[in-house]
Image 1 (cartoon, rainbow, N blue to C red):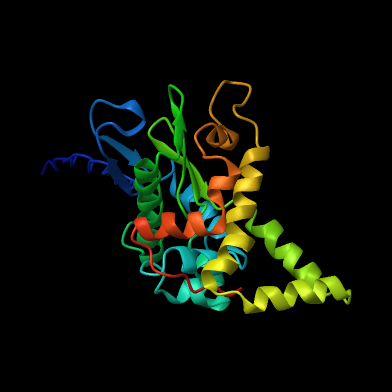
Image 2 (cartoon, rainbow, N blue to C red):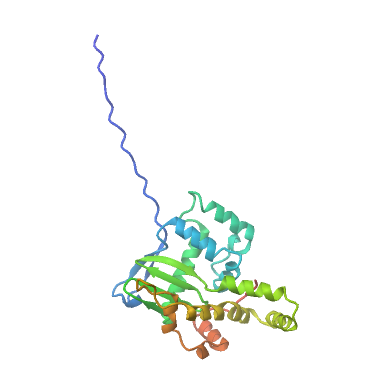
Length: 249
């Protein structure tokens, strides 16, 4: 008896597409565009996780993010260092995706910041790069349809400065600490976060060697320092529908 050899067709190789990072739509007229444009939140999940780790969930950044975006930060990761570290460890694996609450909060923070900068006129752009600044001092850089970076300048330096004051026994430093303790949340945020951020922006270069806009390009669209005094800043915040801040390091 003859046995027939039957060759089964090979199973097709199924490629599972990687999930894209979240994106948001910017209105027509943004940065001189004639049509609405969609911006993707970083070019990869690795870059997104890195930026959240360094600029959003770090010990220095969390208090400022909670104060600046109170309705978006009702997550344990924004309040607890233990939960923040747990998220950072988990984000290095394969479980990170658009449904992650921290990713959703970060996406909302960036989108709101960029749209507020647009309404304030605190943005500048070249052919491919756009730099924005909102009333909380949050800077976003868009490059080629992607978010390149998003952060509040000088947070780390400001925190280090406060630590130095706390460890000093000088009379003038004790006086500074007493003044800081007497300030409300808006005042503390302005003097410890927003004003140092503006000072840093004014020291940054306007563009890099490739002609792309850098953080310092914002100083070309910012009002004079006298118009960014505390009471002017509070007025700007209220006009943008922000409530009084609760800011504690």
